Image: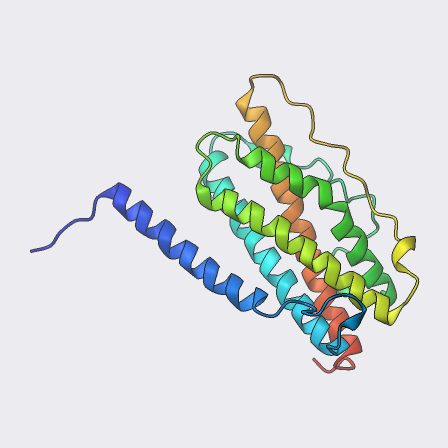
Length: 230
């Protein structure tokens, strides 16, 4: 006899399976902190630090892509958010290369500087994202979990990049000017669509910037650690 699983139960099972895969990936990534001893006592090689930073940046980008797709599938049908999302991101004032070909024309010092600027530019937006998602009606718990995880792991990545840059170019850390976040766009009071679009746009920009960071770090690691042979 064939038993049909209740639709709601199917949904719970899928969430549990997705959560399990995310937890396994998280444990794999954070099982090796970027610098376990911290401070000036970090004895890990620069190559190993780069390797851990690249893994962490890839993990953050994967989470941001999953969160964007999940939000998009659940909240945007019929709302035409994509047509409205042409507005620029708060990091658009930073002159970042748009693709791998452009990035390859830039010195590694400048790419590392851009990574640091973009990461610092996301401090406040990520805190807002974690707070905002808790107030969105019908937002799945998986979106909240990913928002919290991205905020925490981005702080770890920023700390790791400051350590790496401090080794390669001592004294450059305090000179980096990042692009401040102006705050959430004004939403019409009581207009849930306006609020959802603002969150959608924030996720869109996060996915875009996390992808850039991931690509830049892989390129710099290839140049400095593998001498371009990768």
